[in-house]
Amino acid sequence: MLRVLLVDDEPLIREGLASIIDWNSYGFQVIGTADNGRSGLEKIREWKPDVVFVDIRMPGISGIEMVQQAKEEGFTCKFVVLSGYSNFSYAQQAIRLGMESYLLKPIDEEELIPLLERMRIKLKQEKMLEKQLRDFGSISESSKWKQFLLENNRDEDWLQHFRRDTFYLASMTALNDTSSEQITSKLHDGVKEVFHYLWKHDTLFMLFRNLQFTEVKQQLHDLTVSMEDRSLQFQLIEDKNDIDSLPSAVKDLHCLQQFTFAYGDRLILTENDLKADEGDPFEFSKWLEQVCLMVEFDQVDKLDNHLIQLQFYYQRKKYAKGRIIAELIDKMKSIYQELSKSNHSLTVWTNDELVDRFTSAHQLADIIEEIKQQLLDLAHQINGFASDHDTIIDKMKHYVDYFYAKELNVKVMADLFNYNPSYLGKKFKAETGSYFHQYLDAVRITKAKELLVGGSDKVYQVSEKVGYTNQDYFYRKFKYHVGISPKEFQKQSRSTESIKGE
Image (cartoon, rainbow, N blue to C red; front, side, top):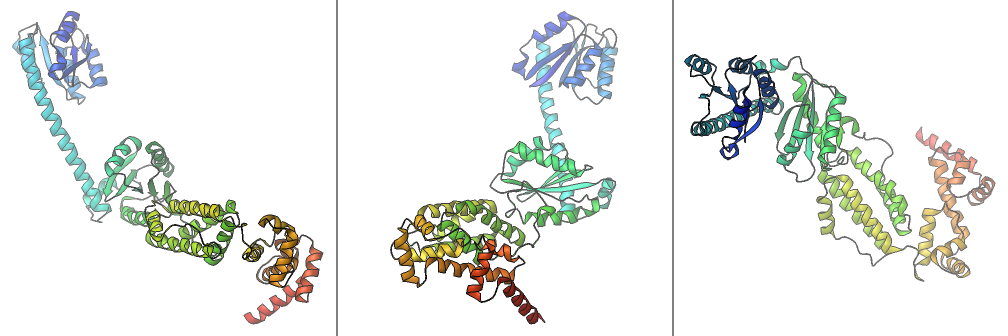
């Protein structure tokens, strides 16, 4: 609907004009009235009508003066003069001011309707032309920014307009199939301070002009909240740029975009978020052994830490998405293979299922969650403490190899595996040649030797780590098995390593 304002100091004229025809049926809506030129000018400023019918002679500011002031202020609405005087001088002024028409009071319905139809067509054409020009200007400006930022083509005259400005550059990638049209429509409402948008393929570049970094980051944060779409990730360069350094910042953004898969759980990714390739080395064989034992012996509450280690490993390595997926598929197959050695009837994902599940994930965190759910399912299937007559001793030894630091004895093991303690102790001795406590001591002393040689722990710390809470008892056991005290063993071992190093 085209909006109409009626300005006349005579109430009967205002009311009569408002009701003389069914305005809506001709595409118009009377949005209000004013009883003098000053009030009319205020309402033009406030409501920005498309058409204003104005009495040419009113007390205070005349209709001519009101129209003149409105045009000087840049308002482009159509003006129709109303007058009770057939005076050509008024018509001349109206024409000079570019008024649409000149109607004599009382208003004739047959004269008003053709005028409205002409104005409706004219306004529609003007609005269409205005939109085309606006779109052309936007396209032209967009083209210049695209050539400069993405193709490094410089227009020095155009760049001069931005020499005194500073910029921050961000980009946005969609981790799923959200369309650019959906995103753009939301962006127009969500980011008020963005200076320029630029799409390239499925990536949106966002340019912020003369803002502080905290303001830019807050804008992006607010947008992530308002869009309610966890599949979108923003990449943000933290350095402030002048116009000349922007193409280099685009290259930095491209680098950040390579990590959207590994860091997909970050809503706003900056260079400072990237983990350096440092810290404890990730030994997959050790990790695999520990994870399989957790699954087999109902220690799934500890899985989260190991899965976080796995996620951090791939974030530090900065591998591409394809390589991460391929390696994680291979790791899952290794877990299946290891667990199947003592659990032959496991139901696991096929190779095709692994590929489908992992390749359809939008981010590394999704795959880690898939792995967790599969491991929980395997733990539920296995029940590692359930065993038959032929496998019970192997499972006991397997348990001791991993949980040697716990308080263990035959009774504890019998309770875990639901056996009679006396029977289990005799069976263990018969199959291994050692009593259970002898086997446990041998495992603990072997682990203690490894810690004394390869670590920086003191003797009492090693004692506790391998399951001996009494240090004197640990000394006696160690000397019995090794022939010397833990302290002497540590000293000799380190002396030998020092000689080798020379």
